[in-house]
Image (cartoon, rainbow, N blue to C red):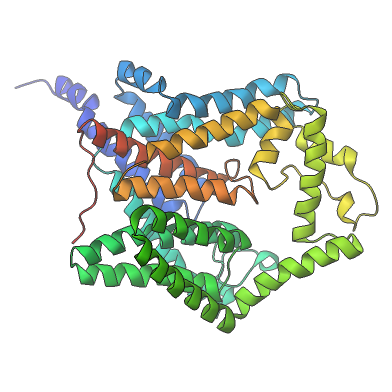
Length: 423
């Protein structure tokens, strides 16, 4: 009889088995990301271990020489080196390095999904998970006691996390479905088109009548415009634009949620200017004004990693309820958050990373559209937030760019990655 141990060793190093294991962990990350921070934090290291076990390190090293890989690594490295000239406590410096460590996963995602055939499974898992969350959001709107949030932190239709994270997920899914909807109609697959339209409208209706972040309200039209510019003829784009304007106007007229979110921008700005009182809009403007002063003091390499909170503490003035007295770790703008800590050097690396990732997704196809949309959403939402640093939105960027990017690399070399054909 053959000895079992050699057979076990063969399976232990079997590339196909470990590729499947890694794919399962990636799918689990996508399924749990809309619901949890703990579970993705467990599944990502498991995924990394499975991939590393059977990695062709020579091929991986060749991949690292491409700018789509080394620019994110350089950005994270700058954050680590920036601890050397920061005046913040070492705890604050190391804490501020943490949010950029997720960028180190990008090369591994590029490598793995240029060899795996299951990249689209991960995207479908994320869509299914967000669709389920959307259904639960309606249920929680009817019965707020079903929310898992503490009573003091509950908001209408929020089961877990917060309305900003939920809005980013729903906006991404709603607009990403535009491409397969158009292609389904062109291929005369009307039932699939109707199903996808229903799901996309479900996300948009939820954001219109339950809860939506103002950032999503601003970025959704931008993402739709990008789709029309790239994938539709100008006459079709004009017809769709007119229809969307009409639907948006109708939604605004019947949705108290949209009216309140839009009106709050004006009212909060007025409170900030006339009363110097803290409000969401006023705080952002104050954070941006002070951040520009911090950048002017150290424009080249910035004030160092983790320096933001200390700088705001030193600049605070007035009574505790005044907007000028508020302090924060993050100025709610990606460019400013980077420039305060790492100056022009950091901004150059950030913009270069965005640029090479945008170029990666040139061309036709669902995969290219998903990757492009993820980058575009991150760029425009980062005008009002620092989403590379945030856990949820940061991982949406890393997973979306890494998986779609790997599939694009496979397609360009004639590899295994293929688009979802659907039923």
